[in-house]
Length: 284
Image (tube, rainbow, N blue to C red; front, top):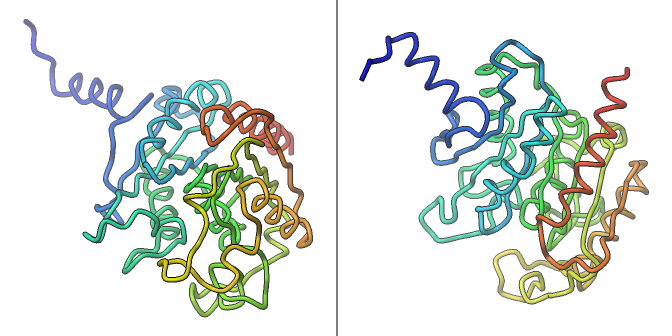
């Protein structure tokens, strides 16, 4: 068997692990946290790409589902897909939900995602100073809160079926409202920037189970008003849409008939929304 020369081996390894459906990479900013990507192979020849960050739910395995589920979209729309992976119990305590609220112990998940994007932009020689973001369930938690805090970083946001929502309520503290946003995160709420982001919200009309999303006294994330946005995911997402619209945001709301809490059955709607925004973005 003929051995590959050093240059050939490097090129082949890059083709296998760095392009198409990539290996799982540790974040340089925080190696406890990881990411997996789909990168259209044309990027190796210098083709410029947009970026979609797709955020997993509580089970984490949807990171791979989203990487693969958006791969064809990415190939034909010149769009890389970056899927962060935030392990359960990253602090050794077994906790599942810290990332949904952007901070957990010494980790600021929003800042880690920004660092991941910058790291991969440098790796693939891309300008990803702005990107799109999608998340479903636990990822929907993360995406709408990231959008509230960092709207200037996004050219679109798609928020799928979050269990709990942060309304743009200046009379209540985080996470129910945004009164202490600047004190907590060092960054003030900027409604004028949020209003520039095309926002998509999506939930199945049969997504009605409440066992996992009802906050009870004594729970880690319980606070006054924790359940006030509604009992079910459709009700809570509708409350979020109303809150965003009152702030001047253009919200596209999809309530999908007959669909329960099924991430893969909403992806077609998400792709339609993103493709439309991309078309307008590239026409400018």
